[in-house]
Length: 164
Picture (tube, helix red, strand yellow):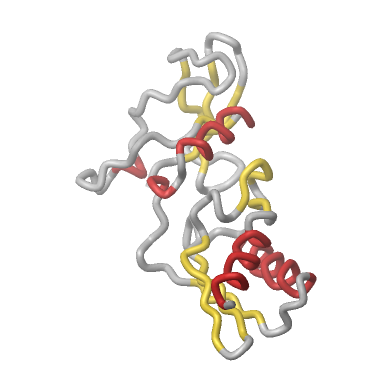
């Protein structure tokens, strides 16, 4: 019975879009680490993409509201920061969704390169025309997890989801 409830919870969570990137849900983003069921209560274990992510409160509220609408009344969200979220938790399908939305997906992170997140010399292809003729305009885009780039080929600005 618990496995059925857990699957209902996971299916419900997969309907919650990332507030900052509405084409992907919080399951696809790898933010849901676990769902714990105990004595009729549900605890959702959540890891933010960044520890200071401004959308966390919204995501937590969306989780509780969505599960309450499904009839679950005792819902708690626990945020865990360790292990830290990594872009390596994104599936290739999720990266394709990001690209189709106009966000250059993250490259594979290198765990041996502790400065990977601040590397400004990465070659980022344009998500619109796939050109390599791009340039970093700002290390910070509309959110801390993205950088702003410009494509010199199709002349489109775009964001790149940073690796970490």
